[in-house]
Length: 125
Image (cartoon, rainbow, N blue to C red; front, side, top):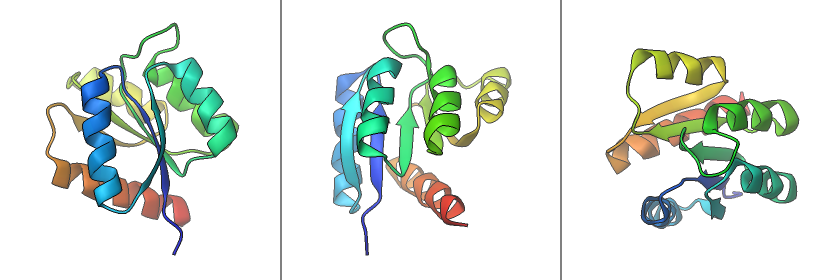
C-alpha cells in the first residue's frame, strides 16, 4: 500500500519537526516542511502531496487561508489547519477556504492522527 505524502506548512520549526516525527512513526511520508505559503506552492507542484497540514499564520506574504484555497484549486490537495486561533470566525473562514479539518493548538497527537485519517479517507471517496 502506498504511503500518503503529507506537506507540513508551519511557521514554528519545533512544531513542524514534532509533527513530522509523529507522521513518520504512523507510516506517512513527510515530503517536506516549510514555513511560507510561497514555498508550500513550489513543493506542492513538485511533490504532489496527498494532504497538507497548515498553520493559518505563516511567514511571508501569503497566509494559510489563501494557501488553502490555492492548494485546493490548483492541485486538489485537501488541507487540515493546525492553529492557535480558536474562534468561531476563524473556523468559519477555514471551512470557506476548503479545509478538510481544523485542530486547535495545543493539540493531542491522537486527535491529529484521527483528523488526518478522516481527511485522507474523504479524499479517496
